[in-house]
Each structure stands twice: as C-alpha cells, then as structure tokens.
Image (cartoon, rainbow, N blue to C red; front, side):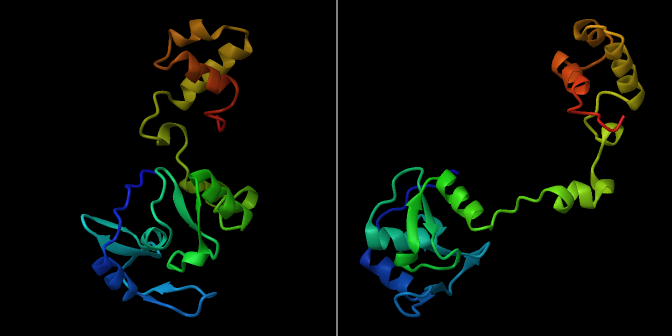
Length: 175
C-alpha cells in the first residue's frame, strides 16, 4: 500500500472539511456526504485528493506515521468520526477484516473455480501456455518411468521448475 503523507490542514481546509459530513452524535458514525470513491469519502487537500477519514485523523490527532493505515472500528468506510478510527499496519487492517468476517475468502463450494469451472482457462486455452496436453502426457509418462527432469527439460520449452510443477501436480492437473 503506497499512501502519500497528508499535509497539516489549514483552518480554511478544516472549515471546508466540516461541511462534508453529517455529525450524528458523538457515538454514531459521522457519514461523509461529499465525494466518495469505493465507499470511502474523498477530500481535496491540495495538492492531493486523499481519503477523508485520514484527514479526520490528522485534524484530530496529528500526523499519521509513514506506512500506517487509518482503520475503522465501525467498518463504515464513509465514517469520519475520530472516535471510530484507529491506526494500524496493513496487516492489522487485514486481520481486523478477517476477524470481523468481512474478508472475501471463498473456499470449497463457494470458490469461483468450483462454481464456474468453465470460466477457468486450463492448459492450451491459456494464451501463455508453452505446452500442449500431449506434451504434458509425454512428460508425465517419462517421469513415471523414472526419467530425471533435466533430461526431459531438453525436449520441451519450459524450465526445470515447470517440469517439477507438472510432476507434483501444481500445474496441468486436468491432464
């Protein structure tokens, strides 16, 4: 995550910032009513357009350390209530997301490849494939007969690593 540092807002910036959110009491989310992108409030703080909740942090608590995220306790990306914000690393932010069940981590039957296998390019369908299904069958047969990868590699346009990935079923499993 490459986040540029935010300059300290001027009094004029702070007045302009305050016009772009609805304060709904000290404990509720202060909803950003200005421009949003991806659900997050956006604020022009010359010379950059920055995330509004980061500006809220700087206004209320001061500078954000380099490489640090401003995260939401409330999980509302449009919230700029300083009491709902906390600092953390990218890892902290991702772990918070996983802990709260917001991470999109499909597995098993929910996996896109399981739901729509016809949409997954395999083997020769992939435009970067260097082998055909027939090549892979030959490689697998030679490996099954005990032939070593370096001698097999000489006959095909792939690396030793590519041969090993076929051998250990990391690629071309469908063949």
